[in-house]
Length: 167
Image (cartoon, rainbow, N blue to C red; front, side, top):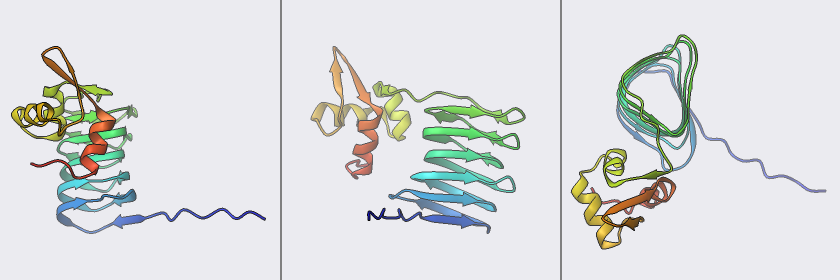
């Protein structure tokens, strides 16, 4: 008889008002139903509930917005805006689902599998000189194409997850 090991699901449900920085290195299912003010850096799934009011810069894998968000959203895998979503700020999704009725007041720039140095500087929120210095010294995974650099987003995400970034 074969037994399958049950994968432990890490769930965090916030119904309170909070402020600060929340950062997760391991995947978690995070749901915010209250108020949050600060920065969110998540792995796994983040759901902003229909009653939530969030003022934050958000970076995550799969993000679902049903409430109000003011700030920048970077979704490395998918961003879903539900009919009740109100987003004020710029979004950077790899894939985007927008339901009828959702409101976006800002710009949308799709994440590509490959980034140039300027796009990578915006993606990592560091200055362009740091990107070029890291790339030229071999600290940053990338390919040189003539005078320009080309960076694989998945390799960059792995590099950042391994804590090799020095801001």
